[in-house]
Image (tube, rainbow, N blue to C red; front, side, top):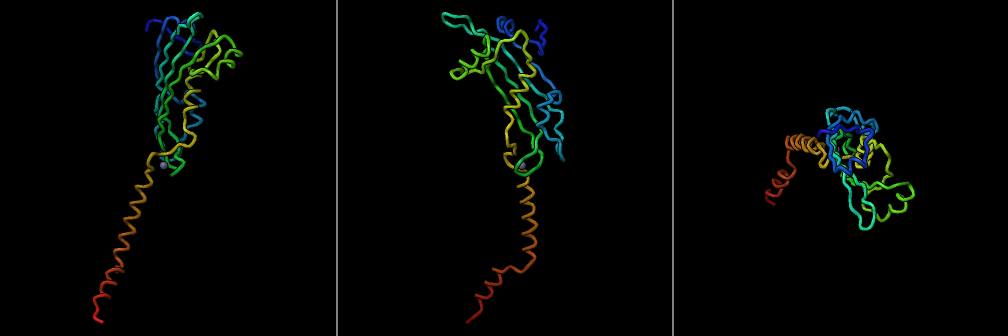
Length: 185
Ligand SMILES: [Zn+2]
């Protein structure tokens, strides 16, 4: 891309009009509110994770009206968190895929919000894309982060083995019973 884009002060209107696309990576530690959700407890070491994002601008034609200014945003990050089931470290893959439509003012946004598939934003001369990416990722973070399968189940089966070994060392009650049954009456 030839044109330099200022992500903190994006001219959305021009971006959409030119059908531009931008993508990049950022360290999630730079997203202060997002990193507040991360967990850096014992065993958690996925600290080098990057936020990958892309934005695409689009003018959507409207019959008998002005074309709509739209922005499609997708972002993802692997966020280190604490599993709420086993309380161990878990890396949660957070994705966001969202389209925004820009309207003239707050009143329009409120009036049209219910019937709109996209999120409505008020058009400003400068949009902070990084803040928007952060907002979207934060909203996509699971409220209760947890492993699909907790690694604790592994420790548990290991514990079971130890338990069974201990059990095997003792005389088997069933074997004793079988001996009992074999005794002649
Ligand atoms: Zn877990």
